[in-house]
Length: 617
Image (cartoon, rainbow, N blue to C red; front, side):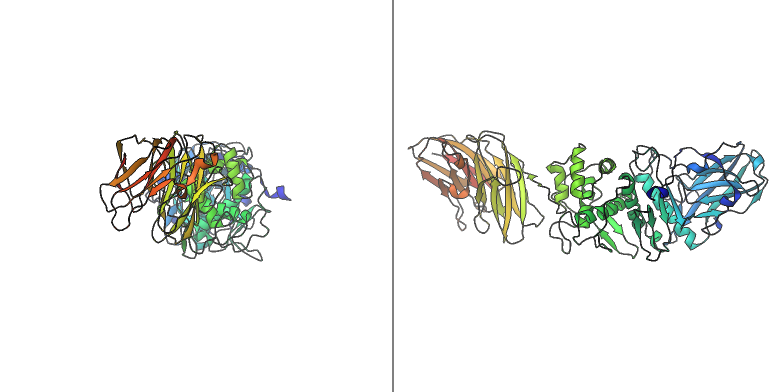
């Protein structure tokens, strides 16, 4: 039965006193207790992992009985040695002060330095010893059904009021050290998971215990979390790879947060190559577990037991061998990393968002989501940021939930992710002509379209010149209401990037006057308004301070009675003067407008930026 494997546990945060039979206390699954010299200088965790508000996992509820008298102390230190021969202090492991004859027992937990100090009544302990047990109220490590524990030699007749120092204690063999290491991975998770109470799941009033079975001796042993039994199974060497242990704990935590409604795993491949597309459900289950492991160790690099590693911060659009979208585990991992802004070793164009790990954890706590898309919907329903700012973190990892990168007025951008299609968004805010423009970088060729809706189904205009000519679409907000627009840049040829910019007209070119302005290399175009009268000829000239960078001049006009003309591409210009790619120098255009109104004067920096002057005569 499903409920049979869930032991009802009540977490306590203080050192508790209890009474058990001697037979239970002497069970020994992990070998005898060894001894090492006590040392307070041996560090275990970096400071970021230890916080003052993390509650104690407490002791298992079945050990709670009436307190005994307290006049004597048992002190000491617990540690273990990892596969590299490095000693670590063990935190939150249970230490029992026991009597061999009477069965008297008082238990406590080690602190962050692996030390214990347990007060007891000396009169009730004539044959005193301690047992270190790999269990507390929130997790345990077992061999089958027996919890690993290690016991010291017996010490007779403690003196009331004295302190019995058991010194430095440690497992006596390789197996014991591995079991202790697996237990300590559980402690790493406990210290890092966002807590609002004393349970893994802050919704719970009765806490669940993560059960870790090591080594797996089933007919088909493997590293896995069994949601039916509610047990983490580990292969013999796996405790030597803490991140692999933490991955499985991540599965157990999801099952706890989901109240046993673990997503269906049928159809999920075993093994599950993280770079291969599978299903949205599999990618979410496995992606969450690996992200959880990375988050607990505050890194983007996953260390495998075979000595290899993978940096899940690195993959983006065009990364060889990694499938795209939320059906790929690597993409889900990267999106969660970028959402929480874990350390990055790469320059990321699309990701500019950060939120605390607690935000992701909160959504998992209050919703049962079987896919990353469902999680994202729930994340927004919980009031967290799912705007374009946050969607960029997903898009960085090829997960596109209608991301539209914002274009800011006058700020040129150069996308670095080599996807064939990029989508943007901007808002017009002033009643003037404006343009969105792009300049491909040689030898690439990109085309530009503009849509009226976020889903990009309502087409407005396009520009698709060949080569590195500047494409632009102009918008007349003198006639068309201000609002939102959604450009799309499509790669026609070549994989090199481009500059893209939205710019609104900030100047009006008056009759018989000049305006000067500057374009950076990243700014493909500029625009100004000018008021023209039907039938009155006009000459508009463009000069440059330097002939090194060439520029072209375009006059955009529309028909007030035809709204479809309020948005138009470069090819609809009523007049134009193209720069000479050889001589450079000034360009000018003379024409007679057919309508009175405000026209747009567009300048394109075909060969980069520079200082320019527009003159109307």
